Image (cartoon, rainbow, N blue to C red; front, top):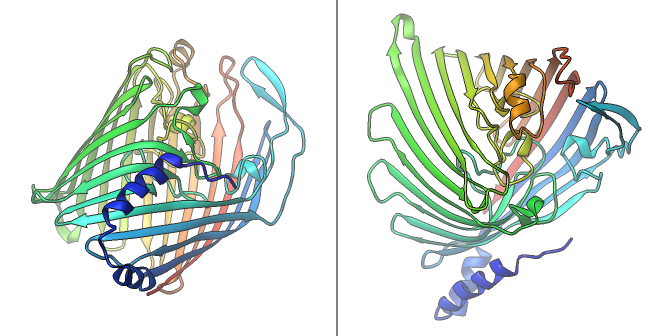
Length: 432
């Protein structure tokens, strides 16, 4: 394990020096009276795929974090992330057809699951090391940390989350309004151990800047606007409107709705080439008591939304930002794609819920071929059953079974069908 975050350590040192006037006794008390949190996780992942290497791993480990008690607004946190595969399947060379090329896929079967590193190695790393200063309605954090914004986020959908070396500031001083600012220097992808530049795959080292504004002053309405700039790569504007009670019907039924619009353009040296595209998404949810039914759709412009989807292990944008995000892969964000789907969910009890999901992605062959789409795909369907059960306040069991089916296409032949199973057990607790 190599800890290469000298810039962050330098900034942490500066903050430490500013606090040198604090008494050693008070600092010691704050550090010894902190909180230890643990998320033990066992995760079985199996993906049986045609024309590609399978995916299978049984990982154990989790997140173990200690947060100090705040003193004069200053606190610190350190989190150790670990994941080890018990199966060690290795690789079984498989012929793969990727549009015009035929190759032999020798990727690691465990690594394909993204529960561990891509080469099958375990993950052992300090995912969080930060200082935090809170004053009035403002929180300033510097160091390795998790972020939670619409496009740049920890995306905790496999074994470990993403983590970022960043300086972030969150202010809630204005009524019903949260303002977020951040500068991100490096990041650790969820299935990797090392921190790297967000533009390492492009052979350069660029920072990402973001500013976000969230307002909920209107009754049942939340408005969000976020601007992201990855220097010399792209600018991204994200806007959304969420309305929790568009209508209230007889019998306790209600309708919720949401819209989102993303505009993305190339910036500076255009390291990904010319980029001028958008995403428009909409969804409606009908719900009553323990039942909900959601309809959702997304449409993509002439270029692929970059940094998410197929790019989710590059450029920092890891969450698939489309509403129709149940796909095993991110091709719903390909150039010209139109996706639509539905989600039926029922809470059988306060501990047990189940959902049946379906999404269809209609690809546009012409737009994919005319753009820089990195993962050209034919149209596809996915069916998904997702169940979770909370045994108590500390334990949760989740089962997800998905089937993805690609249409035959004489032009775009990068296709494979897959049956995908995930079984996750989390045991979480904290000690003060």
